[in-house]
Amino acid sequence: MDTRTLCLGVLSLGEMSGYDIKKCLEASFRHFFQASYGSIYPALAELARKGYVRVRTIVQEGRPDKKVYSITPAGLEALRAELAAAEPRHRVRSEFLVLMFFAHHLPPERLAEVIDEMIARWERILFEDLAAFEKAEGGPGVGELEPGMRFALGFGRTVLSAALAYVRRQRPGLLREIAERPSGEDAAADGAIAGAGD
Amino acid sequence: MDTRTLCLGVLSLGEMSGYDIKKCLEASFRHFFQASYGSIYPALAELARKGYVRVRTIVQEGRPDKKVYSITPAGLEALRAELAAAEPRHRVRSEFLVLMFFAHHLPPERLAEVIDEMIARWERILFEDLAAFEKAEGGPGVGELEPGMRFALGFGRTVLSAALAYVRRQRPGLLREIAERPSGEDAAADGAIAGAGD
DNA sequence: CCACACATGTAAATTGTTACATGATTGA
DNA sequence: TCAATCATGTAACAATTTACATGTGTGG
Image 1 (cartoon, chains in turn yellow, green, purple, red):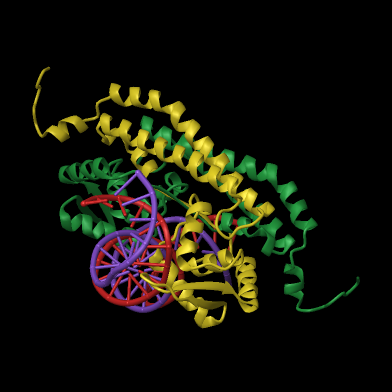
Image 2: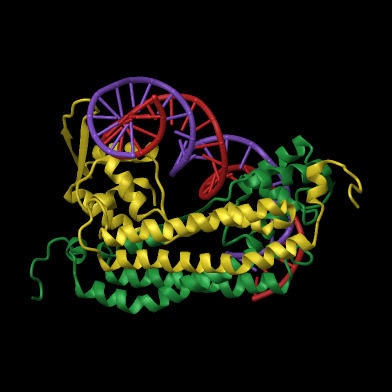
């Protein structure tokens, strides 16, 4: 599934500009899908070309004309067809976990830093983004939450909570174990200060 | 972080061919990093060009010569530098959750199918891949498990378990709610059989 | 007899991100 | 005054997947 289908999906919730779509994705899809303007604007152009969306240009002063997109019946049909045909993939690409896997190659201070950075990031997502989304009931363009939306939201919250709890629980032990077995990364970092202070 | 660093990391566990690296990644990194031959072979070529790995060619009959790569001191240094400098990202791209978010646009049968497919896939990863990995203590090339490896492994197991439990728990309710509110996808799928059987 | 494991590699196609280009308004 | 919000779009760049190209041995 590509950004095109995503945009179409978001537009099925209500008419929006490209800018709004980005906001909406950031608010609601942040933890399982991301898209930049560089993919959203071309996607909208192609959807318009295919007749899946209609464009209404709102003339503005001091800034580019706003282009509000709304889904057409053909677009809704295409969306449903694409969703029904899409195979449900779920990919994780985690540089964080690669770093953890090779933690024994990392300077201990950096390891602690990395873990704390990850904890902070996940806390922010969990408490700011998701809470805000549920409060606003979907943010711009989204009215009442459909059951599936609550499911996706709940999934994010559940999995993030589990991840956060795990990392918090494991942090002290991991740090201790790494500190106890110096596997050469300090020597490598310092060059060859052989036996300094030993 | 790209495939190059990953290959270097895997090679820090022991010498291996490109084919072996793929196997190793599938066994140990499956749930948080994936790479195809199309990215592994070019990565190895560049690592060799940079002097980060040494190549030993083993002549074989009936199949291409096997090329066994081993990391050099320069390679180990580069690996450590790159790991220390890498920022810990963790991205999820889930077509599955997009599908769930727009579940009200999906035919109910398909929705059930999608959920069951996901459950089956995650069960397989959880019970086959991870169990096998822990039993073999790392699979090809990996000796004793470092603390960081256990951390990464445990993370995968924890998060997958949480995901699986959530989906299993929510499945009946979601299916029921979706069945109860027919939001037009059946009519769309059938064309316009207005009032048939009503 | 077919599919899978072994084994390496290239090229095309896809897909997406980042940076650039432009610029007014508003609030801290 | 500085940063953020609003607003669209393109182009260069990066990274990866998929398909292609080639071929043997083994087990069901």
